[in-house]
Image 1 (cartoon, rainbow, N blue to C red):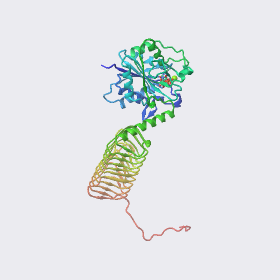
Image 2: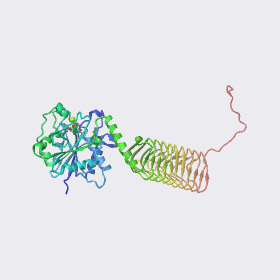
Image 3: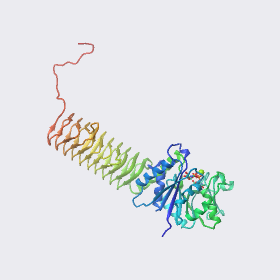
Image 4: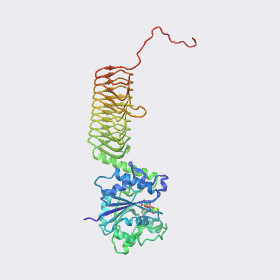
Length: 476
Ligand code: UD1
Ligand code: MG
């Protein structure tokens, strides 16, 4: 049996430089809170437990975490999420001390930060392997400019020399500040050793804080091996302290996601002009033009083409469908389905509960909400279909509207197969238009119509022949 992993996630800090009322770890990257990325990472290394250390905005952070575990955790993840409050915040060592009552001695503690969102599970697994249930394993990185970071002090100048200590930048001598290998903020440590070492911390240092990093010298003094697992990918350990850094990591995250899509065969017009804020899965031969945003869960079938400037959320688009430019699709909770070979847009809007069958056409300035359109139905211009059931091959004219709301309740409109609705009609729900019927342009339909009939409900046209247009200046 491998040693159980318990994760401690430090998230008590204020995040002053974000200049925001929202706690720092709840700011979003790729559409998801920074802390949610870290919790998912903990789940993906099969951690037994995660203890989030909260302080500033503790209640808000804790409430948000319950949301993430419900929304994000996979059903097979057994991660037990707990919280420990750290008030006041007396340093990273003091932060981890708050978690100790929740940690069992048979485990390895993996220390993460709630504001470091891009660490990859494989990196943590390698670190955990280095710890091997008995060593103190530090994740380290060599930086061109290590200013501000804790330096890895080794017994000699060779890269493989024994690690002796971590010295914080503010406490470092001029010579130590020359060291470019830094501590990333991530370590794996046997919990029983961590417990003993944390009890020995003091705050006699430049910042008057209890430094977690001081445990390295205790490990050395106790003859416990200290290993540095070095990585080269700085983004994996980069923290977010400011909106600028958040935007930088967002770009890294997006470009990695874009590369992964292209490696699967997705053709992106420009990988720098794609934003995925959720999960996008694509079949073969999918093409995505520039400036598209995908949110929530979006699935694109084989051969789907997405035009420029589309925003698409919580939607399934079947094979061969084409979404023309400037289309907005948001399925929210009910979802949106677009059938095989459907043509949507440009400038179309599909709202929650829009279920479009194969070869449906939705054209410009057409809004569809909570409506089912069967195969081959078309609404090509300036129309609204809300709370409607539309049969096969229906043609729904320009400017026509389902009046679905009576001011208090929503009602359904049923348009049976092969109906032709003329332009500028109002279908006042609840109402059914019988199969094969035609509704004359400009009609306001308040009663259901028989199959096959032509229904017209508008003022009769009159033409006055003995009428002359008024002339300017002549009164009466
Ligand atoms: C820490 C390390 C430093 C390392 C750097 C990497 C220590 C003493 N130093 O420095 O060696 O190079 O990270 O980024 O650990 N936090 C709390 N409670 C506290 C203090 C901090 O929860 O009392 C949280 C912060 O919110 C943050 C994390 O711990 O998420 C790290 O704290 P921070 O102050 O950023 O650490 P550094 O001083 O940068
Ligand atoms: Mg600090």
